Image 1 (cartoon, rainbow, N blue to C red):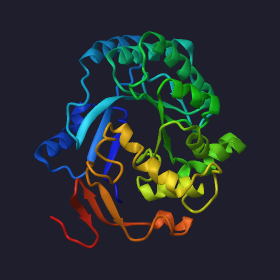
Image 2 (image 1 turned 135 degrees about the vertical axis):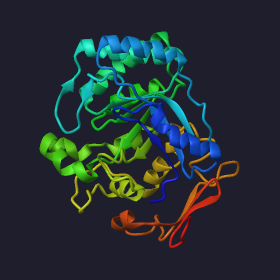
Image 3 (image 1 turned 30 degrees about the vertical axis):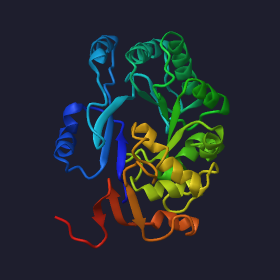
Image 4 (image 1 turned 180 degrees about the vertical axis):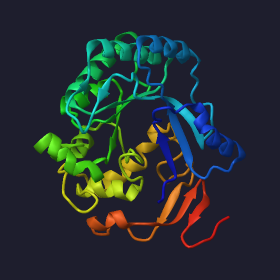
Length: 314
């Protein structure tokens, strides 16, 4: 599919041991993609938060190499704090947010990267209020903290994020959930996620799939949705589209920032690794509806061919 690297935000039940095969291959020089991940714990009670707080001082990201490593913490900070794309409301009770704040503040104090899953406008406000308060004691600017999804983020919230030095991870979940989003959110779904609003805000942001549980991992499907606003099957569900150049930059150069590899990958220039694709057609000139059908003929990672269409590889 032409994926040369990704950020794994973890999931329920994930721990460091699940990444041992990646680490082993990376140490052998046999890993043919760049794989980075964030620690996820999702404590469910204040007592479990106490255990997490005892663990954070020992957290040491960036102990891997340029093919594999842990980059920080995320994506669901405190399990009971929930925001749901496909269900209005969620759990934003003050006592739950207070536990989330305890973890976020400890991460800031330790100087660790944090990515938080948040979607709806009211929840984004609550999260930002917590971060702004933490920032007064432990500045987070420079830690590259981010929010993922942000389906209802407003211009004012984007400005608050920028003041904190934050970035945005925007995903193409409406590829298969768009029609249901319109049932639940009505006309607001036309701007979920608000690609154009985020792009025009000037905030650093990356485009991704949030695969594989909720969308296909094929990057050309993600690029296609950001440009056309159409689901798989062709139904128009989003009017916040961006240009194909903007989408490509967000999916490559900008995403390298979330891997903390922006000095190594994401664009073709002297001093960076040759992570690149040779495509079966020109992404910049094919009809918009054909972007989703693009296929790689050759995939290279670090100048090494790791995939060649039609070639048999051991």
